Image (cartoon, rainbow, N blue to C red):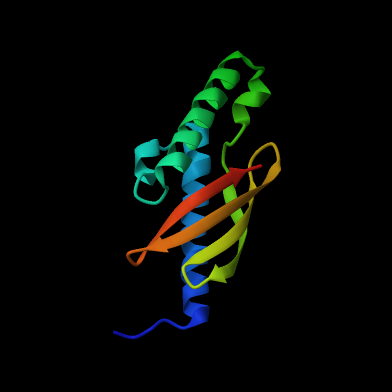
Amino acid sequence: MAVPSPGDEAREICAITRATVQAAIEVLAGTRPIHQLARRLDQRCLTVLQHRAALTRRVAARAPRKMGLLHRNASVRSVRACGVTPDVYEASAVVIDELRVRAVAVRLERSKNVWRVTALEIG
């Protein structure tokens, strides 16, 4: 089995981060079920995201129409990753939606050759 080069691994981390961040924003928007992230996020991150999604829906239901656009049509514009150790990466992403631009920070840890998100902070 070939060992991936550091550049290949960084590209893989950026791809995982991009897909995970996009999916998390879609969960907040109510357009994706949270269980689709269960394999990628650890249990704590999954619980926090689920709680935030519920709060976002509750606030949007009572807010003016413009607030209903929060997290709508979001897209990940850029992703950067930095290796902390061979089994830990930290990444950041810039996400733009109909109302604003936001930053997202992600920590990924490798366990049994699988990358899992252990920290997810959506600004």
